[in-house]
Image (cartoon, rainbow, N blue to C red; front, top):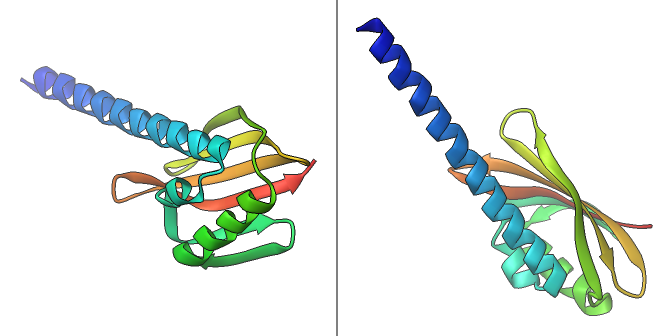
Length: 131
């Protein structure tokens, strides 16, 4: 009986882990697609209620609505030519990261940090750094 309970608990843990991994992959794919398109509206659907934004001329913590406007202005001034995810992974405590390269007239290294909140992965830090 104890063995059966142990097996059930292991399976439940595996299923929960796979579900979390799938959620993170789905969020990562949508975020990458939004950046590639220069679509601040779609990107903002993945913003936390407050987040840190670091782009040339701006480096601060701001609300989701303010961050959306800042990114609209950034994409308007720097329309995308291409965007490539170079690396993504996990760090501690339900945190995921994406490192990429965004090309417009200038090439930027991108760093995105996501945290799981209420069953969704949300962007808590977004950085575009001139390469």
